[in-house]
Length: 370
Image 1: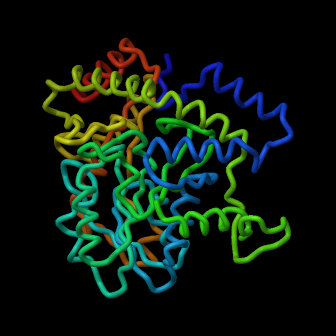
Image 2: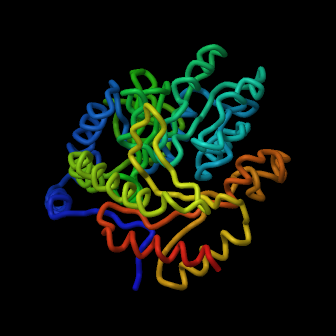
């Protein structure tokens, strides 16, 4: 038996779309790029979308576009995938971590203002696991202090808060399309903004610093090859067209987990807060009593039984190269550290069956009893 942590959901429509591009002369910088960008901006509700080759590239370009530079500080969360912090470092700036809310697991907005200094230029909040809770308040705090918000929506495609879609809160926002995300392009990302100048700058930066209409060997600024091919875009167009179907499938899997685990007081089972429509990226339960050793034992035992699970996420501030450079240490962010010792990411993907969810839950409960 093998129950995977994640699986993409690819149909014949995606395969046909990719094959159609492969039969054309336009494998990159062709019509599918613009088509994907336009479809995505329409879905989110922003003026512009800029496709790039990863969410990491999107975050880096967004930070670069608003002028983040050496000596600046950007406030973010220590409970996230590492790119939220390393892209700040790639700009030469310092990631200033703020501890998380123990319920939503997003950055605790009540603690943000105490971290603001005269070097602070932006806030980079993350909709962790697809949860947009608190993002309206984060933006109010940013406005008060005249800070830009770069919204890390890489895990939140399809989520909304009080009817406002994830990706519309920040000055710029970024989505990602790795195969475990709600939709996939294999690898890929998307920058969203209503600012035409920022969008144009990102278009140039992703394409070796070329400006629109300039010749292939004409470069106006330092740029990068962060382009997304038409092959990837063709896949993304079909995936995005299926987003409501995909959300419904993932909601069903989340509901099964919630129903089967709700009565187990040894676990904290995630639920959507009032006003939050979560488009589930992963389904992460927590041990009610935090224990790094017991959590790791559970991960090992479930893996040995053919069930892939993971520890989403280890604390970013304690990654050795970050701790060494900025002086972060154990105990700096106690809520994050406690949560990180207790998380168990369960198998989660569109076509996971109810019977498979039942096997996962039964195995988890048996393992908890050891």
